[in-house]
Image (cartoon, rainbow, N blue to C red; front, side, top):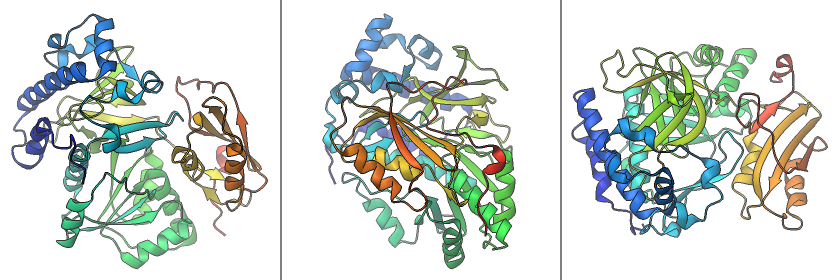
Length: 446
């Protein structure tokens, strides 16, 4: 395992809050957040050129930021602000980029973005996710069936801790490729009978529809956990009917891992307040409970590549400062703007758009600045591409041939190069959109 800049004593308070101390009340948690915020701001301004320049332009000194109440003085940063910058402008001095774990995000905007973290940062953020799963009803010895995209493990991401826990019968997870046909996903769920199932909300919803329409029962787990896409009320009802158990939803992103998880008592979402400062802003001001606003996040423990007041591109409905269940965490009532549709092929089969998008995000040679996948009809799917300069010869044709070789895609897929992708009326960029009437978005259950 590469340990260069991996052990950072400033991450220890996060580990302690999870495994040793915890928080008795909101006041204690707030003092912790303010202390970590001061350390983060001082570190970012000292070691990250982007934030040093940002603070200079805004006319503020790191010492001006003493608590969460001072955050509004810092300008909001967006992905578009960071993308054009060289790596050494956004990664902290002393954290060699080639020795960090890299996560490449497609995001909801269709702009590929690379996030870098140390090995210990990755473990800490993942530990916050495990905390949420345990709070949702996971038992340490449960076997988890994870219906998700299967990714290669980054070379710098040693799995020694997870392998050790697995040897002890803890935190055991079996991956099920979310791109499999829904019948095959059900086959694997029947074969393994997992007590806990996690997965992308859209994939579990379509799997549940397949189960209900074909009469193929799914062995009921004790718990289903969704994430990755917005879980709409009708999707929750269908999943609970097919899986025969309650659903707990989570909210996360590549930049921050877990942001929030659903409270079993109230149904609202606990914010991961001991790892993040999450603002819901409406017209630049903090949203009131019940108001919808834009999600802006500060990561208290991302030091290799800090995120301070980062505009995530999502919207959410503000909740109360403390949850009615008694937990010290603030809440959001609902997450908006994360829904991802499915492609509908000419024979009625469904295909997840990420089967195409992942070929761009994880391409060995990056040639795409932004993209948008559009289903114009069942016989026409177009990928609009804003290229990075002049694409290398042959890459576009090779990409088209790869996609057209996928079942059902021959003759209906094409790419278009464009100078810009227009914003949606909502003010956001859509990574995928369908022009099909709602009635046509139905799985083929023959």
